[in-house]
Amino acid sequence: MKIEEYLTTLPDSILSGEDVQLPKEAFREILKFANLSKDDIFYHLGCGDGTGLVVAKEEFNSKKIIGIDNSKQKINTALKILKEKNYSGIRIFCENIEDSNFDDADVILFWFVDDNILEKMMPKFSKLKQGTRIITIWGPLPECLPQKVEFPYIMNQVPFNKTKDLQEQLLAIFDVKCVDFVTAWEFAERYTKTIGSENPENDRFLTIIQSLVIWINAKNLGVACGDDIPEPIQNYISILKKFFNIEVEHLLK
Image 1 (tube, one colour):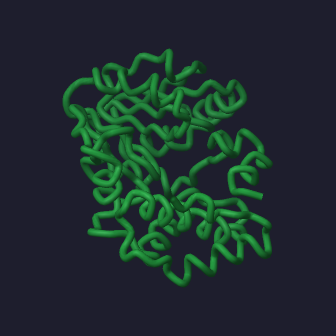
Image 2 (tube, rainbow, N blue to C red):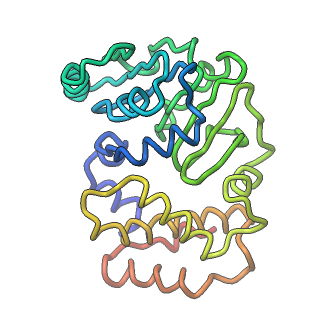
């Protein structure tokens, strides 16, 4: 089957990222990357069980911390955790982020890949006060050059620097002149380690998939190193097809 067909066999919640809960260490790295301070107002859009909010309070002591999520179950879990810790200065709202007001934000953590959500959020982000830092994971905001990158963490800052094209954006993220297999694997592995899979035995499979996605995107955008398909890429394409019945060659343009 084509990889797109394989993805449709997975639960919607996994594809949307709804079931991915970052470990505490990842939140610590993200907030350090964002230079979060005690004077900042921090919003976590899609806050899940509130782990990121707890880290912002315990380790960065930001003056105002707000979590927003549309899952009542996750919000209830977060509220229970915060009540047990008896924290003040943290507020949580159960609502869609598209309907939320975060005009006073200094730092926003935003990890969504749904095109419909991105389309609705970009006008809101563009109107935020100058200097607001928006942190994403894996990919930058659409049509924007990152202000800072420690992959898979990416910072865009208001006002946004617009990119000329996807090629410029991709090379800015990876900070290379071209993308080879080693670069694709290194960055895919960083992402895999960040999301902290509950089943570590699946991490290598995820890294293979992600490295192929990175390299194939680079190839199609004309920023891969060389004209030939690297031997490791050929091998992994063959492994996916032979042992998992997953075909990715059609993605190469």
